[in-house]
Image (cartoon, rainbow, N blue to C red; front, top):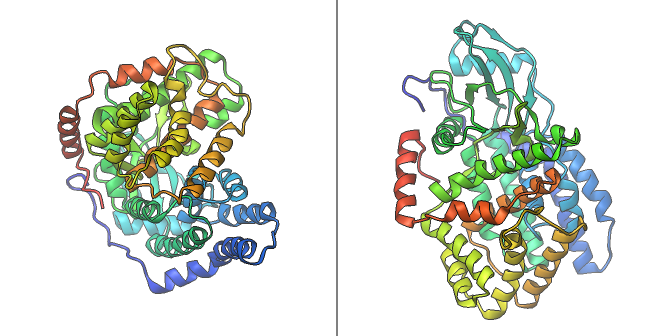
Length: 456
């Protein structure tokens, strides 16, 4: 937190808050468990698609991380049955906004009873509503336009209750299907969600991204406002732009599509390969297109900091797939944290790696996926799933979770943009001077300058 910033009372999880939340959501979670168990144990098959649609409707009207987790799991192959993944991928994190009484109480708690005197204007209606908080547009006394993100009440209890239910649902599915052992997936999700409750941490991570992307003028990152940020209030400069999905629906020309995709590539992969840091939420709502074709990158609550050796493993696996070098692939998976790897397991894992790296292998302009089949990626995932079940399953390490999610999430955005770029050249130019010692040193300096606290 910046020096001189207000410090609000910490708001930890309460037992009654958790019970209230579980009462509202337990039917949705246990409904999945009951249907999956019924299919496997008693042989009958319910209508998954109907229940999945009901589940999306329930979660879409809730504030809190169950919706965010559902979006997350829908991007991880085989973390959920296909029907649930397809429905939950449509969630857009637009829970109804809280009214003015809540806004006034929250702002008083964070900035004091005279909080309105600290602004020249403050919008009474929310400009945007999301899973953990809502955003209001305001103006500072000096005329600076800002966005104020206010955390919803009792979110620590909501997170605690939702994580309990997530653990239950994942445990039930794990007993029914051993292809992907999900213990570390849960731990990673839980850690990142708890970090997202701390808006002071998000402000520091926003400063970090401004440092890392300072050399990319076509990627804009808002600036947190000192003295206006607490653990439950994040005030940042307002960025003008339209939701990226809205711009895509307007069918922009190919040149603009390519430019937006190039800026997205830089926004995600310059921090990763130069600093070992990844933005862990590839949700479409976190990107805005500007009138000049540049890009706004938003929401810095979920980031992952990797040691440079892990990023080296990402590059090594690319080279192993390119050169068909099974020994180098084994080395890369080991760096990532995969254990007990046999040649048979690696052959299955490489099916997925080949799918992800394929656009990078040829030195030419192309789309991210050249197959016209929209189910192509899911068919690859199904083949991988069958292979993993046959050989007894695999346990993905924690570090792998956000990396895989980012690759899938970004790939889907590039697919929607119909971007045509030389992905091979972009990637190889980025990793050309990669050195682990340099990346670790650069990362340490940037984290210290931004004031990012150590990971949980």
